[in-house]
Length: 635
Image (tube, rainbow, N blue to C red; front, side, top):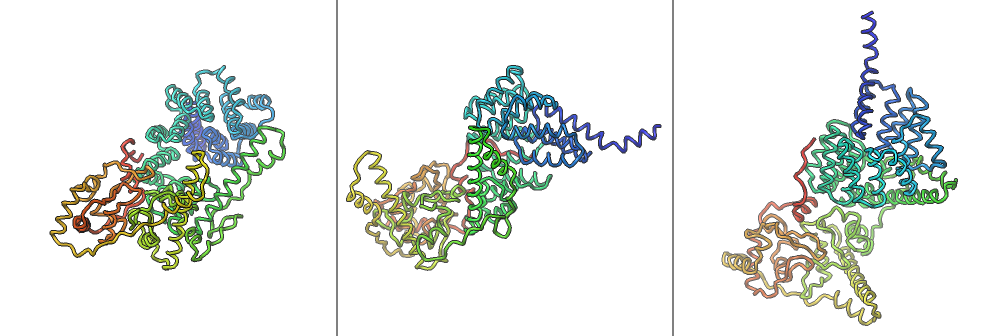
């Protein structure tokens, strides 16, 4: 008999262990710890992989956390296994309501779920969330009121109150409710997640990071919590710590689509565009517009504009489908019996025409046509410049978010490198910038273009500037309610865009000790050390801003390349004329002998090798973040 018991226990050990883990998971779910519960259920599933009830419990966790795709996956898995039809239908019904499927008769649906064994908390939460998805806050409020009348202090009910207020934009009230829940039940992971999301959406990143770290801790390093820690670390500029968290995550589980997306974001922020491309290539096209935009940026910043345009084409399609989805939900909110809208919405929700990116094309989405190869300024600008400076030159190109310093607004911003007394650039000034690039920025050299192409491109840049100056005049007059005078407009544009007399640069002979000594005296006399430091390496602490109010860092004259070039003539112009639009001032009162000496002194400070900093490094040096916590260690 004892032998029989031992044999049965051995044969059923998987089911026994699975049942134990299910009980633990159920206890965690009661406390709102759905991430932790899902981990216990995943373990239970390994002990008893044939039990579909475990998948249904996992689906419930995903439902509460708002993870619709994972919910659908768990439901599909349960359907293929042994599971009660009653339990399956109950979770299916709850999930559909939670994710926004229209409900014809609320009372009948509620009674049916009660008869199926669903708890009040489960039913009420599904209806509140579903009504908010359908943008029917009044109905959500009615359900909440009935729920709170019977359970005014329940953690789940209070959490949904917070979700309700957040949906209405009442962030302060939502925050208070989430904090009430956590004061009552610190393990309530759903409330902590919603609080962290709320803080992050308000750009209170340091506070959000604290909540995400706490969530990762209490959930024993659950994947999505650790990934959220990495995301906020990235947003705060702690790239090494963000990468460390992701590497730790990769060491314990297979990389997911979300993992690839976050790694792509980290690499693009660090300027590792090819690595970013590798990660984004692993991402299917069934993504949000933000992800597709970042993927496009990774290719655009590496000069692969046609590939970038393919991602943009898909993003536009996703945006169009999203708008259609929204329109259909509005129609159903107004008329729940609109069958055409219901059928189309169901088709959009269940369609699976998204396929991975392969060979530069998308399933049923036609790849973008190659950009025209021509010598016209407009085509050259679109091909080489629009991704950063924007299609109209406003500085808001597709990749501008990832760049530091931000691309210049060609329509209103002043040119940094000029050779004229009125600081208006000549055509040759623009061509020189195109030829050399702008060291210390993302502006590359276009020395591979022919002289004719560079001239055409420079003419296009000057044309965009004239258009912008004209717009400024018209906008100012309209704002003042004044009549537009054509002659005044023409005079204003000509004054602002016509180069003045070019500065005559004297012959600058070779440096000698006396000239360098004179330059050093001038360096301190004209207080160059206030920005560039006593030794030319820059103190960095000085808060400086450009014409757009963005942080600007003084050049390290020792270790960085000079933006206008290291030749004596270029440095002469930078000292005399300054860098318009930046904190670097002009120095018109300096005597020529002092100026030449200062040129030699600045050149004497320069040493090799030069820094080649990334966008991320430049941004960190510019902002000198002091309002964020210490980096978070890897879990």
